[in-house]
Length: 314
Ligand SMILES: Cc1cc2nc3c(=O)[nH]c(=O)nc-3n(C[C@H](O)[C@H](O)[C@H](O)COP(=O)(O)OP(=O)(O)OC[C@H]3O[C@@H](n4cnc5c(N)ncnc54)[C@H](O)[C@@H]3O)c2cc1C
Image (cartoon, rainbow, N blue to C red):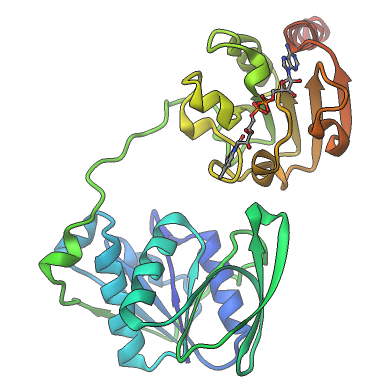
């Protein structure tokens, strides 16, 4: 029997959780699900698992990774799960790492394929998705996270049954918890949903220099992204960063201006259908992976593109 941790938002299971359910189905045997915190009961209605366990507790309003770990371990033990699969998101991975320590079992993260057997054969995404690792997992109870968007999720559907319960939590389980959420600036299109992303790198030169990037993004109905060199310089917030340690995006077109194309940056933009690079250096790494490349100063090229768009729309 395989247990899947299902994250949920606004009363529905997240896409990556449906992908975790699909990965668990590949292990064979019955799949049960675990939802934690407020809104779990509502979201349980769309989770197609034999049994959906919903952990409800007044202290679970804020994410607390040790509390989640305690709940995951408790349910896994109670139902005799041979594997626990979770979405490869920040919070779920945090909780699974803590669960692995409690259970004394290894955790395999970012799994994109699994073949049942002893040991389990896994494919894992490494180095921000630049490398596929073939691995064997020797474990009494396999703990896995699914690489986000690497496989198709199951369709939402009705559960066999729903069992709500109140977990026992120790004071120590609630020491680490989220105290505050900082919302990104309101308005505009989110990086996650944008069909067009216009990104600026160190080549933009300053926070003020992003005016031309913002202007083009607005004209194209897109979102602004940036490289880590930019966030490290304090020109843009980390919420705008694309890459291994930033957002993973999948727009129709990715317009990278003054970005060199470091592996860690491209790790976040791999999902883009097309890449257009604007760079003064024809030998910059991004030029070799771009579908379209303009060799030139972004402060001339980008405003010229915006002006042409405005002229054609006038
Ligand atoms: C563990 C780790 C994680 C990381 N995670 C991330 C991540 O998530 N995201 C990320 O972006 N980076 C990440 N990095 C950093 C990454 O390795 C690079 O250092 C970073 O992406 C470089 O940013 P950049 O391309 O803006 O700057 P640079 O590499 O300095 O490139 C600037 C580019 O701008 C061009 N340019 C200069 N002036 C102009 C102009 N006027 N017009 C047009 N082009 C111009 C230059 O030719 C150059 O190609 C990570 C690094 C590590 C070690």
